[in-house]
Amino acid sequence: MIAISLWQPWASLMSDGRKRIETRHWRGPLDLVGQEIAIHAAKKVDAEACRQFGYDPKTIVRGAIVSTHKLLGYIQFTEQNRNAIMDRYGNFEVGRWGWVLPIARKLYDPIPAIGHQGVWYWCPPWED
Image (cartoon, rainbow, N blue to C red; front, side, top):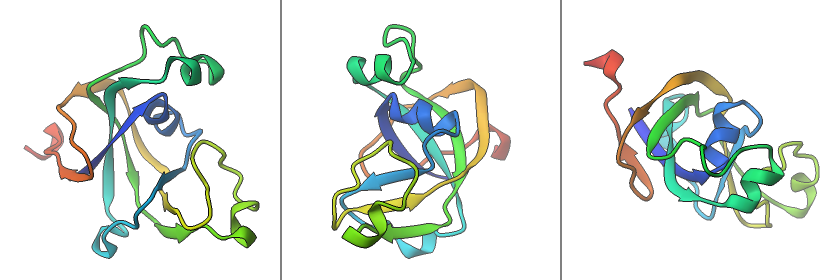
């Protein structure tokens, strides 16, 4: 399964279903559309954002897969469309890309994993 790593609290916002669009400066590969993608909570934590969104920066999950999501597609942000997007947990600057990722499965017992930059492969235990 393909995975992407997000700093905290953004990974937890995804696993809680509050964040449905992951913003990146690049569009992902088109062959990922329709696939399930794992969200990895990186070890990097933005303590101020954690408190702002209701998470404890000392106890938030780190270094683990926290959820999986089905990638519905990509959207490039323009002046016209970015104001209509209800999900405000990201950088919606004009020209950036949104990965539309509604939640498929929240892992209530996160699975430890070493993350990577970009898109990377993770083998879920249910596929062993």
